[in-house]
Length: 323
Ligand SMILES: [Zn+2]
Ligand SMILES: [Zn+2]
Image (cartoon, rainbow, N blue to C red; front, top):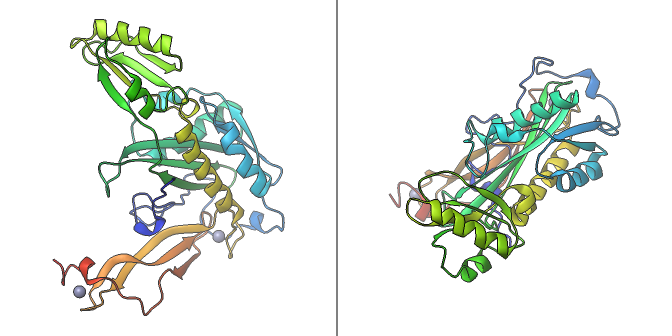
């Protein structure tokens, strides 16, 4: 079962919602917010255009089809060393929020390919703040349009991510761990558990290589153990690929959705309004009451109620009735 977090539960996993309330960003001097004539066309502005996808890990087959299908945007991959922005394996630490990293990745690809339209995705896997013993994979995907000075992004989260890890000696039976890690469909990384950071073996998908890597890494580790963990790179982790695909589908729908005021692509939720009255005392409880849709190119906003006016919150959630 794929458990997708209820997008109405609020930040931080809500697509296109930031604590600041403004998540569809204009980060390029090419355009200033305000209705823009170039969007005023019947055909979708990205139909027949080409965006370059910065990827080192084979994301093209999962990201291109929904975008092509939704608006006829062609996607080409460009192999840039996105690892310079940080890696899942931790040998290069990430700096900055995932959205900023994704935008930086897209721009790396755009400058490598000499294009003004770029795509990139960025994932983070961590304990779910709401359910700390469950890991959640949050995948962000961005479209950067430097012709028009807009950035459109979406995200998708799932608990159905395989991210197993163990520390073992060379003689330990790995079978139970390998079953939980869904090996070899999900490939593995092996490194010393403590002491030297090398050797590090990535993308292991056969038992012979795994056994040899564990023996070598355990033999050089200060504590005699090898660290074995899921290789979370997109091409070695099918459960992560599924979450990236979900994010790409959301981005495709969002790009297909155009601003009712100026026609720009990327109309969708940018904020959530909290505040549903408690059934007993009327105090506003921090539950979503409405969503605010916004445009990446102009200042137009529209509010949509997500609960009917007569709905009241459970007093159990009320800070006054249930302090
Ligand atoms: Zn109350
Ligand atoms: Zn607009």
